[in-house]
Image (cartoon, rainbow, N blue to C red):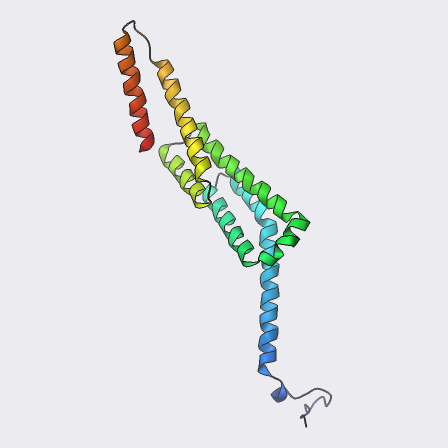
Length: 177
């Protein structure tokens, strides 16, 4: 026979309840909370990325992308809901905007060497090494071309070719560093 609680004879006594029932309920509640927080985080990713892009805080933006990827991997079952709700499309568009902004910084030539290295390192972290390399080398090629056009031809071809060669190879060495 089950013992009934003293106050309410219709409820079973707490001593009779199984502790594993409470654990299962707590684990289920934790799982539901994790899924809800994951969905909320993924919904907010585009806005966070846009804010970081505007402020040129690429380090923080890359951290957001990495965190979103880990959440998506941990909650793969949410993928159909993300696609159906448009969250996936918004997320992909924001990531594309981040990539374009970082490439634009590398192509601009207005960055110093340290900032260019930092942007390239961040792009490599999220798997965009090819885009980073192409943008950086494209900018360096344009800079070398502009420097060559500024070399004046003084009538001596040997002197001119030597000046251009020294300039080009010095810039290539600087690019490699």
